Length: 271
Ligand SMILES: Cc1cc2nc3c(=O)[nH]c(=O)nc-3n(C[C@H](O)[C@H](O)[C@H](O)COP(=O)(O)OP(=O)(O)OC[C@H]3O[C@@H](n4cnc5c(N)ncnc54)[C@H](O)[C@@H]3O)c2cc1C
Image 1 (cartoon, rainbow, N blue to C red):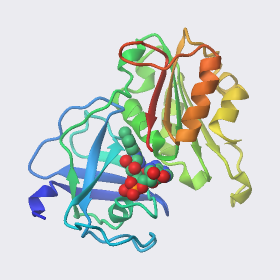
Image 2: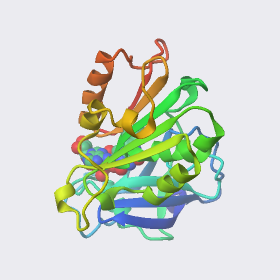
Image 3: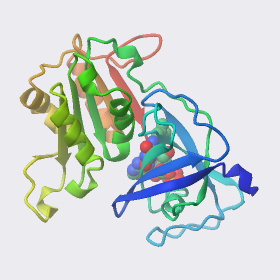
Image 4: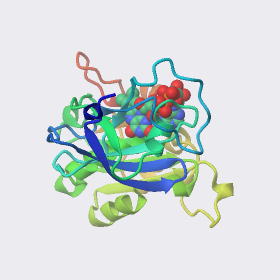
């Protein structure tokens, strides 16, 4: 493996919780292209790269020199050219993430120069309210959207519901609280599914995103009565949350968006 294939360098690895990191990467000898908030790119490492200590063992790879490549949503804003940021969970049995978790500041990594994806705010119009529903690292594209253009710069309402198992898995929490404090039109609703395991009693929402939606959490917390006419809904992360939410939303008259047939439901499946 030519070292030049690993065309970027890890500038910072921030541990959120044991299985979650924020990874900042800097291109080596090239400039980050412009991209739209919500898009993704590809990271890669060779099979010869060591795995993290706390990952599962894997069977011997056929050609370990080959790059293992996977897609990752970008959590930073395009206007920031200093580094590109990702929010990554470790799949212990996975091929790439245990190797990413073993990286340190200064480690080399492959970063694709192609940035792509249609999970962006582009098709929502400037008047529509925006509801961003995400589980785990499904928050990443929303961070990019909020960092690219602060909600206070628009008249519409933005609501984020971020679901995680534990409060300590709620990445970017202080930044989201700050945005909510600064922008009256932004509501941040963190929700956990295992409140009984909290060390300090959890005063926030608990339960799955689909149940919170059914119970009217958006209306209660933000005052918005979302309808297909006034709101676009974004879904990202766990595929079962996405499937259940799409059914619920369709029964409320929302329609999945496509290029040919515009609708109000936008989704990004991670697996
Ligand atoms: C458009 C797109 C954007 C993505 N953005 C992100 C991102 O921002 N952050 C991120 O962590 N992942 C993201 N993913 C998932 C990522 O591409 C990899 O699938 C993931 O990191 C696992 O890679 P791996 O090689 O370790 O596991 P693999 O050996 O490829 O094993 C894949 C299996 O791991 C499980 N899996 C995959 N992703 C997850 C996950 N996030 N949580 C729990 N289980 C999972 C599934 O069962 C899947 O079948 C994205 C995927 C897509 C398609």
